[in-house]
Image 1 (cartoon, one colour):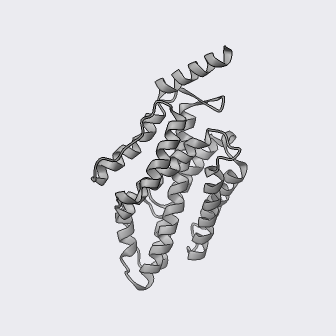
Image 2: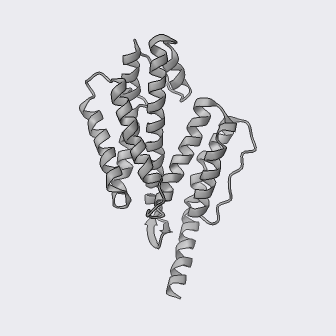
Image 3: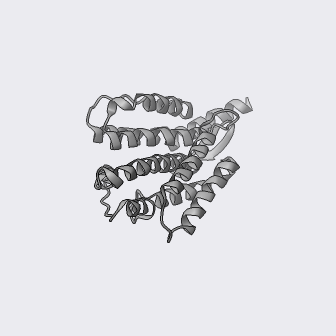
Length: 241
């Protein structure tokens, strides 16, 4: 899928770049959401339910072990699993580096700051205060890239990733299809802006696994080589005419 072209605001970007912007949006949203869940679960592990952290990660398909509340935070940040904050931020940064020419400098530098802080603190104790600071930083990044004001249409790929990730995590963490109506509507609007041939997704099943499969397949319906190439050819023809 790497050879197609998309036109965004009169500028052609590759399908590979579109995919990287999309995944950047997903990973940033995932990190921010899971950081909040970590802080909430930490409070439960301390004095209400020592197994709350295990229950949280079980919803993500991950088994974790920890001795106490602070050890739980360490496992959530640096654990050897795909849902560790360090892994997610590393993936977000890799996609950001590849698309840096399209990204707001403040957002990129803030992500870099978070990454460098994590790397430097790998051998240190993880505190709830440091997580709160990271949450604030990710809220800043999400705010920058969620705004449409003065932003190129390429940012819609980031926003599409954000809303799909929100949808995905709400279902996994809370098992509530009735809670994702706003995310579904926003996702469909953005997807249609990016691909005029996109047909809005409708939820017709109560089976969470089927719904997740449909939602996570939206990006493939939006970013398609043949459709991208067609849009590019038509827009180029119109501009020449």
